[in-house]
Length: 376
Image 1: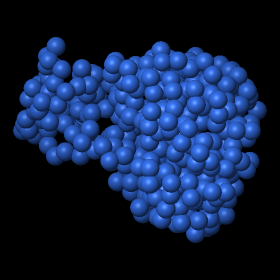
Image 2: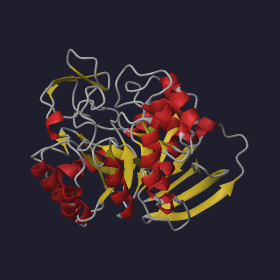
Image 3: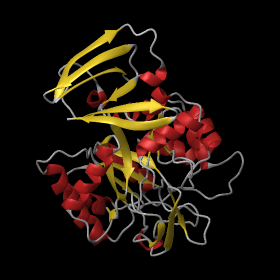
């Protein structure tokens, strides 16, 4: 298959003529295209990188009935939407299922068919159990950090746990963060009520991400002293944001990203397993509550509370560019290059002649982002 187009590349200067064939970039040359508008140019990327995917198409990564086939189906569905790298996320669940599913993910990662799985994200087990801060995570599975338990999980995963999000104020939380970083594992702060001084201590121990910042806290907080301002103010702390239009209003999201800086902001989906299913009412496997899927959002029935997200990351990129007054280039960078930089694998995002696929080509026109082509 031969494919040619004029394109731009996020974080690169100029317009390029791409020639792709035989599974790799045959030619990539800068060209003069003075009369070409922004809307006539395609965007060539190594794919979006979603650091937080809990499931999709009815397949819950923390369910007792998970298997490799379901993981591969999620991978294919994400690929169709331009996400070529992702972190399957295991959330609050009983230890037996967590351990079993980590072994299943290990098999999916090690099998010969290519997947976009970069590594596993653990979230929910060691978070705050306070109402509001814990969100929709099941309180019966929330506890203090346990290094021995974590080591069993990491062994079960084949060493594939790359990120662990937790509440630093839990007993042993600071020591656990230190342990993670000494094992080469990223530590994120999530669903917590830590004060500024404790957040600083957590960062000193190695925590470097505010996981889905602005979400995962109580609805009413002190106007000055709160977990949002504290984490936005620490320059070395990255922040991930759910840009689906439901979790954070566009004006709040713009202000938060402007404060953190586009160079330290990461877009995620936080996809729940009901994403991709028809609208309707479902019983959530995670907490046994009725969940309404409507207008690309998920809400606990009769409660003013979201239950994860339904929009894939490409829709988040579109939302940022359409409603938050960021360029489509900045939006693509926050959803692809920045997560790679966070994990130290920015070379995976480099575009150059001889580079093999898959690659994702996006079209941006009339405030809509569409996958033009997945090059394999």
